[in-house]
Length: 223
Image (cartoon, rainbow, N blue to C red; front, side, top):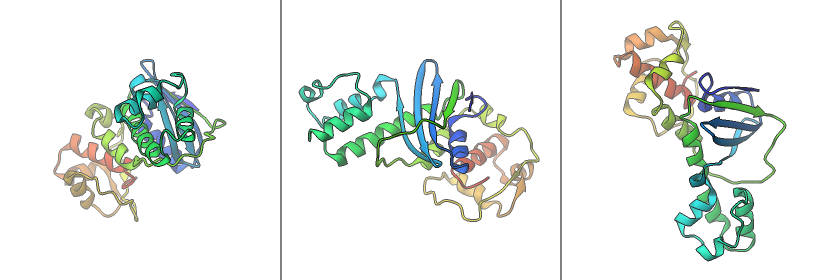
């Protein structure tokens, strides 16, 4: 499977992968920047990028968790996962510290790719991550954050049919990161409603309403 990010940005791909319980390697490219993400049965597992500032070595330098002398012992071309494995194996970095730092790095990689609306994507269901990782990444919050940074005209393009029915989930995911306006919009209806009617009763204006509907959908609160 492959396509254009202008037609299916990463946030929407993540939701589709989750809904369909897909797995494999999702590769994205934008202006020669590459991001690779992995999923297993619809669950996000890992992300990495070819951008130098988003590599684990750079995060280790900034964190001062290990000395520069120790870090220079390892080949700069080592993949992040291999570098982490060797550091923990040699007791230069604790497992807990590695997980926390790596989780922050992976979240930052996602922050970059989630706002791409140009570029390409490709999903290879045959490629899987062999490493056992225990990363703590709040994916729902990252999706919300990204939706708030996307251009208004792009979000408007995601709603081509004003008669599209928006449905609140009967048991929505708990999310404590909603903006007051998002909470307000969510409170305006408790049953399926055409988009044009939701815009009419929201009192927020069309552009703002569409942005909040998009954000809430990505957060798993609407469909």
